[in-house]
Image (spheres, rainbow, N blue to C red):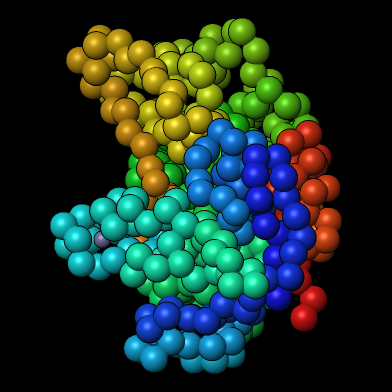
Length: 366
Ligand SMILES: [Zn+2]
Ligand SMILES: [Zn+2]
């Protein structure tokens, strides 16, 4: 099968790799569309360590092509979305229902192997690593069933690209991890795909005002034109003052979501949020960033939290998000605004880096 293989930092090669076989509780998916996420780019650029060679891509959707011997409830031909959250359902975190922080997930998602500890991808017999146990920048992907969500047949799969990771993360941040109350004022830093999804989630829960904040004016405009944001700020040195000015009492927003995760972005959020408000980290530019938290902010009851993958329960929340999309309450399909063939993946990454899109996806023609 054709795949884009990251062989070293900044090196992505289109290669013919061996067709992978699903393990006992895995399925093979013929990929139709797969979103392009900043996390793929971070790995490519070496900001995020994973073993190489690796097939990136973790926002795949498609049709089940083959099922492992112990798979039940899924059949060949089913349309599915892969979730980056594939809980083990056996660890203490899964036991308490916190599927998005499954202990086993953290052990395997970036290890290059599948949950059973063995590799799945090869080229002429030589091992290639998996990414998020998915590796969807390829014509076929082998995925553990706990991260495979069957979706309705009456919705085009290309509209669901991104729901695996970025879009579900944004929706879950404002709808599940830090659920926004009706009438709240919300600021979202970062108006890319994740940030705009966060805004759409807040709007679906009837936030009164949603302020889109980004350094790139075209992204702020996109958030406004999609109806995700009610106000916009081009981020500069006075960003905290500008957010305070737009907050109803001048003392900060009720909710601040940081979809960037850059140096000092959470500090901006803490300063721009009212006492007793919530600051939620969603984005992560580099894994080693640290923030300063003023103790006064905590004593004044600001809640500082974060989310992995939107804290979703994939089997419940992905169908719920799709249902809301079909009813017109959550138009997240409009976030993906550029599509590429696999052969155009270098261009897709270049466009992502130079902000030529809100969010892109690779489309496969089988
Ligand atoms: Zn992602
Ligand atoms: Zn678990």
